[in-house]
Image (cartoon, rainbow, N blue to C red):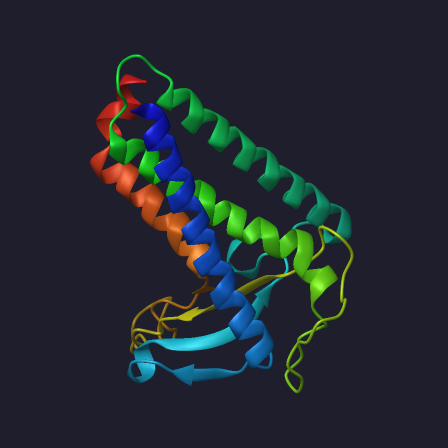
Length: 198
């Protein structure tokens, strides 16, 4: 039974990573950097940007920091999959929602790891005037993460203190980020009892 569950989780992880990579490759090879179009009015757009470092475009110590960050992500991914495997081997069954939530997080992390490891080796540089093709723009582990989902839901009125004139939700993210976020929120909201016992 647990082997069957493990196979289904692996399949789920593979499907999520394939969806993530398919979207990223379509955007990277079909749009110039900064290119965008509306999907559902102005509040949902596809906007192609590249993330050089951590979440929301933050950087992490230049080239050496990027190597360290990518290595750290790989270690976290391996630890997460090891933990899922350990949970599946327990005599007392673990709630399916726990391992599904952890699988979402692991798959999302792996999707972004692929960008960091290989995109610099596989694609040419994306620019505002040129769409990427097969080529090379960075060494191993120095690739940029492709982001594209943008939800500028509304702009705060100018009279609101501190945030007046700003867009309510400004981050641009990708499918892998969504997997991580959905998995984490699901675990916090619906599986907190399991983790409190742990």
